[in-house]
Each structure stands twice: as C-alpha cells, then as structure tokens.
Image (cartoon, rainbow, N blue to C red; front, side, top):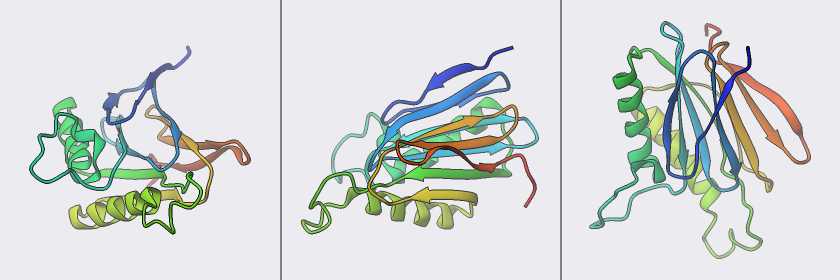
Length: 167
C-alpha cells in the first residue's frame, strides 16, 4: 500500500499517522522540524520561516516562527493523541542568498540557532539535524517507520535518522 503524501507548506503545522508521509519541500533558509511519538506512531512537522514573531504584531500563522511554531507543533501532537515523550529531527537553515551573511541577514543560521535554543529550553530530544550550507533541502518523514530523509540537489536523498530507534 502506498503512503499518502502530506505537503507541509511554509508556516504550516501538519500531523500524520501510519500510512501517511510528511514532506517540507524547498527548505532554503527555512527549517523543517519533525516530531514523533514512538508509542502512538503519530508524527508531526512544522515548516519554520523565521526565528521569532514580530513584537506587537498579530501572529495568525504560528508555524511561521520558531518561537511560536515549535509550541504549535507540540500542541497539535498532543491534540492528535501523542504522548509527551517526543523525539525530533530537523533540517534546513541554508544560506541561499549571496551576500546575506555580510549584511547580517543570514536567516538560515538564525533559524537554526533559534530551533536549537527552543528545543534545549523545552528539553526536546533531538535525534539528528542537518543545517547550514548553501543549498536547499527537502525533509521527508515516514511515521510508520520513523524514518526521516533529506534530499538536496547535490547530495541526493539520504537517511537522516530513524526517530523510531531508541537512544
């Protein structure tokens, strides 16, 4: 039986179960963060665009920012029936715009650092990550097996980790 592909677009939070696959396409400076509950085999993913929400502005898309997207992912996982012992993997955070680091606009590295800090603050168990560089990636997650893959133009598709494996 084939897997139903669920695209996770920019600023979106999506949940999947066995038989479904989550995929965040075209992660340049964005970060795709996958979450998994081994007990229920419920998976989730958020496609983060920026490190932090803007002060004094309404945030109608919490998945857009690391500081609101990660809590939104955790809430969605809980609402779907996942337990509290989640494991995570993420990818993205590339520097895709030439000269952006010099201008202080390296959104990719700022996104990666924001996700790292939020995961540490929440005590989230990050199993694997692949960030940086200068090429876009696609993060795909298969809740049935826990497999997380990363695809890039130069690197092809490779296994990042299995969130189903212990330790």
